[in-house]
Amino acid sequence: MNVERIWRKEARKRKANDFRKDRMIRNRPIHAQRAVEVFRAFALEAEKYGVYLIVREPEWSPKPDTLGEFIIGASSVHIRFGSEYTGEGLLTRTSDGETTRLDLERGSELIIHHSPADGSIQVFFEYPVSNLEEENRKEPLLYTFTYNTDLLTNDWLISLLKRFLAFNRVESRLQHPSYLDTWRMRWWRFTDVRNRRGYLNSFQHLLTPWELLLLAAVATLPGFAIIQWLWGKL
Image (cartoon, rainbow, N blue to C red; front, side, top):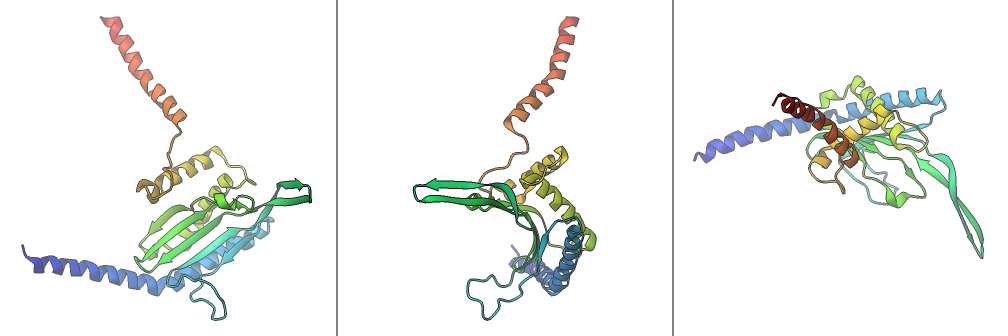
């Protein structure tokens, strides 16, 4: 075994990977700013139709006068639907009196996350959540990921926003999805790489047990027809 040859080959691969990561880290501020500009233009257009969206820029370093825990190195750009009241709530009546909590939905969120560790770009769709159900918050959907920063064009960002709107129509209690929206959402959950690798709390199936049973029944119909035809020939 030629161990020197093995490590020469490995060294070339490591060098190429380091070059790719360094290039991504250098270009990250440019790509992040591009995402911010596209998201802000989208939010301004939405405002004309009475829809409020919040855009959050990357925090490259924690503010010196702020206390708390901060993630350093990684960065992300966010766009989120504003919080809205659903018209429902919770009335609690006791011997001491009454309290009312109104149901407030915190809107869906699109996150473009950059990790310098592996030089990846991940796109997450964060589910909307009610202030009355914070403990039941779902894991965000990993819509897509890439190691190629050249994909972060204006057209690519706009395509993400279109899919984010479909995601929100399905998941928000304040919106109504089309049948196509629902199936797209099922497909995205099913193809989430964490779902395929078993990283999620529960496996997301593409079809329900009832749909699988119906599909199996339909698939057997041609077989029955062939059997009847052959039986008639005997």
